[in-house]
Figure 1 (cartoon, rainbow, N blue to C red):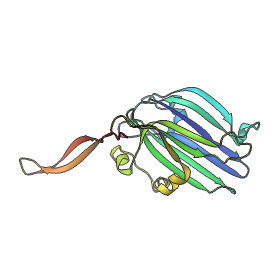
Figure 2 (figure 1 turned 60 degrees about the vertical axis):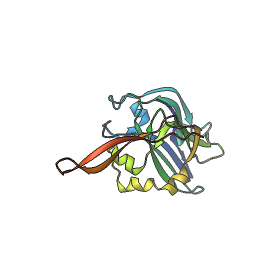
Figure 3 (figure 1 turned 180 degrees about the horizontal axis):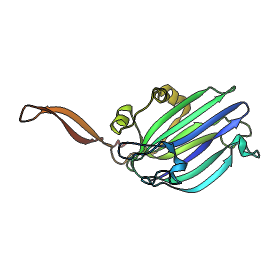
Figure 4 (figure 1 turned 135 degrees about the vertical axis):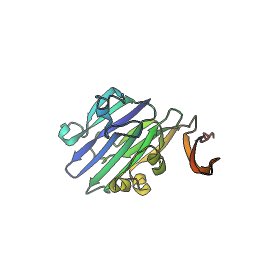
Amino acid sequence: MLISATTGQENFPEATSKFHVFFVPTRERMGKEVPLGMMAKGANPDVPVTISGAQYIPAMTNYPETLGKWTNARYDVPEGVVLKIFAHRKGRMVPTDTAAIYIQLRSGAALRRLSCDTLRHAKGARDAVHYEGRFDVLTLQQMAQLGISLNPQMMGLLDPRKQAAMFRETVLDRETAGRVSVRTRQVKNSEGKTVAVSRPTTARAVRL
């Protein structure tokens, strides 16, 4: 599946901002959590990722990359891969915030764009950076079903108030197929024993 993202950071004297995308291991796709750019370099051969059209942009126009840089690129990532979108801002003139969103790529999902404001410095190269693709935003329950465990610090970054302060979501095209989930319930079999029965269910796509 094709996605596009601008990742990197600004390291200005008075403030800093970061925007990164990470591959997240799950029960089906094992490995380590690594930046998407490292996946494109073969960090996990079991999850092939390719990169194209990469552009490297200094964070501040006409200044060296020691002040940071942005990488704008397209990636081809297998369907079903889980990614973590991470954003951070800190400085004297901007509110200090850090947040994360976990998403799963799905071809039938709505086409969405996640945007995050940069420091908006007068000489900054970007006012905002983006991630764009077809994906579902995962709930904690869905993440647990996928075998994703979070430490308390990361749990704090999923606070909806932090997410709202860092990210803007825009739906560019509607969902074409509902997400399949698995519901499990306890029943008694013919021998009177309680067993778990799982049944896949599909959420209906919303059509406006």
